[in-house]
Length: 271
Image (cartoon, rainbow, N blue to C red):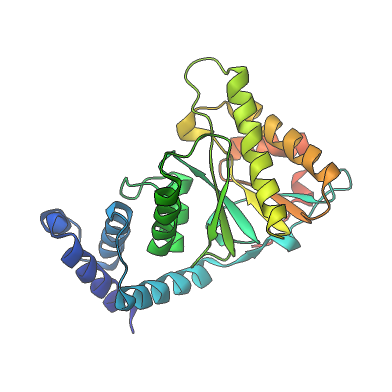
């Protein structure tokens, strides 16, 4: 089935479920890019509710094709250094990384980003994984019965991501100067994700820059806490074979290169 037809069918199915968005949908361009943006927007705003098999078959066909077109990056093939033989750095789209688990920086609801086409990593991961991810997160949160506190970790399947699983963690939101509690909660995010990964027998984990960006943790201090926490964990654990620090912005890439003792020549892009 042609991609344009796939997208049209998916938009039609979602608008049947979400008729309140039909007037807004008419404002999107009718070309392929406009209709794909509409689809992502509808997926972003759709609340957790039962997913129909015909929708899932079409959605998974589209997302798996887009995954292969973007190109999958094997996390185990990324270069490391002698100082950190189990730690790698990669700059790029985390939804391309093949690892046992990638880490999603969530909010306390743990349901993904509801802002259409927002630029946060939470939106990117949920958009690439598919609506099953929000559905599984919803089941976890209903069973828990309360918002997710900072510094914990939850594990779900990765669905249409190259990664087998997603580790969900809520980082601290920094309001004003960074406090000791902020630092402790951020360290706990990294530690909890690694502990849960090791408990489940996972061997490779890719971390995003938790709590930076929308949550306002200063980039350099956040990176320092991340590297220190991960390095300390790996000293005492042999289960995790590879930790990847995934960065998107140039500023974070430079900070992590410095902290890990990497140079640009050693950091060849495997993708």
